[in-house]
Image (cartoon, rainbow, N blue to C red; front, side, top):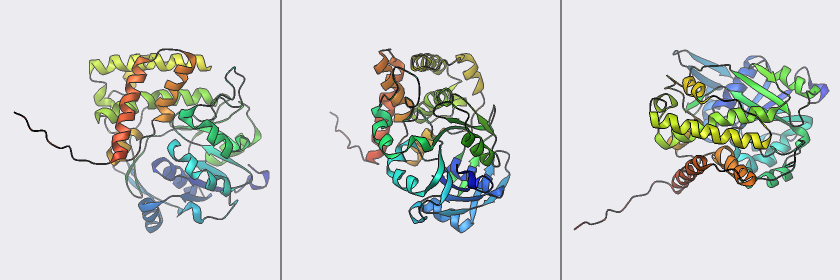
Length: 346
């Protein structure tokens, strides 16, 4: 971020879905100059309501006033700090606008689920610079300037109930936004970005953003696809013995891939299963997208892990099976509703 704008930076949340609208609303509530970049019915509702409507698990409702606009209608170089809360599947299409809107000296905070396209960039590793097709690494590296990017992970589930209206379920564990530089440094701009964003949400800095990405990936990779395929919450799934065995196998495979990629994950399957007991109202984004008939964000979550496993020549049979099923589900969603012709029987 530019030192000239430390006191009152211009902030854009690009991709104002559930998480983006929540973060942007909180920052605006704190008195910052914030714009939500949104589209379609969601944008219309945000503009009509002059902000976002929150509904909490305890029944409370809250209105957060904030300006919303179509990104293509915003002026060039208008923002010092851009939180990119789009799904990874939407990045390439939105990249020209994101870059156009960033002011000189500004930075992009990339808040996506899954592994980032820069996972092997700016690191000391035999795989440094390796491109992954599942992450569209080559294409995104040609579009984005890595010098402008901060990695981020957010712990705050949210569901878009309707355009402009967000449900915030109760959660176990810490709620925070973790920020890190790609090279692991605790730079001045990292601290500056944190000072801005902590007005809206608790911020934690890390010298190893990739490890944080892997930790969040584990949760998304296990519970997201399982929820989408079974149309069930993790709280319901954990009640089934067969599911508990499958979760343990998936965790073991993911942790081995992460280890070979340079990140040691200490994850106890029993603790992870215990964590989701009673978790009945939280809907992973993959389940939300399935129910809404939207394309699934599976490549950056499970596809990338499978591609890494092939690169490292480590077997991941459970991941491959679940990946094939999710790919099939995604293809079905993108084909749209269709009638199955009955077959006559003798």
